[in-house]
Length: 428
Image: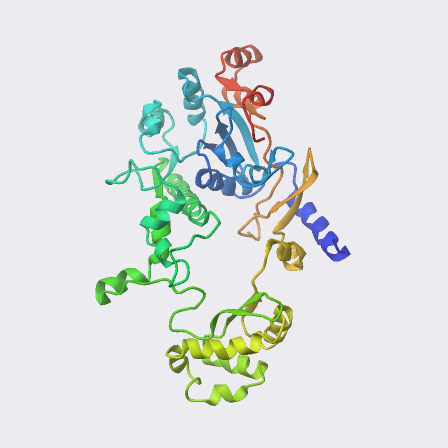
């Protein structure tokens, strides 16, 4: 790491490593019953901005711990998505475990769950019953297809809900089967909708004192990306198709190959930017050619226009192209790998690569906090840890259980400390 990057990293640590939660949600308490990605990410957003998040896991741990890469049997993804949370382990399949969760639900402002609809009711944890004793409770429900409708009983992952929502049909090359983005895009988008809903419910609670239920679905989050195509289908009968790297009816706006085997994204949509591009390419006459001079004329010559630009990019490296075009104020970028991101000072300056202390590795770099608030910014103060790390302290602090009561629950495998969970848990 260069001295500049090291300094930026050190500066980042001093800003984003307080000893306790900070941010506008400080003082609010959240109970996370969700698993895998959408629920935990929704809660992580709240935890980053100061909420006290208590995550409930089975003794085998949230399946999210088994996703992504591991190092020395440590879930690297878990260290990030479980950060800033108090981690407790409860067997919710037992009646006593359900009672523990029920008592916790009475002590919090927000509950986040992403079980299949009907699961909480079968566990005796219906919102309506809990709200009788905690009328301000906000319940954030995340599911594949929503709490109502003919598809509500279906199991749903982000990938299947992208297919139902029309998104998968739009991804990939036109002459190939639909592709996937190898990222949990729909889970993350759904989590943001869910968190937004919870914040609106908090605003409403300030007015009325009453909580409410937020019904968020993966398929609706995916479908929201189809917004421009809904009225177009109704009025024009147009079924949009996969277009690959190109932007339909717009050029130049695509990926272009380079001399060194990279790709650059060049977006010269409007006529002013196109003129700057042609000057940077050393071909200013293109901007005055009636075949290419206007956005409309280029829109019917997309392939032709892309070949002209490709002929220029193939003779230069990605960095050369990026340098020339950015100097000319043409929106462009090489297609970054994660290695490029770690080497880029902008990510350090913007505190998006944050080094945190880790008990096994010494330090671990995780993604930073977003968005940025000027007066009450969020923060990272601890990484995710072992299943059951905070079971005893949470039961003592929130429910007033003494050591004898906690030990009795542990002896019957109702709750689990970190040491107990190690015996049944693989990813830590």
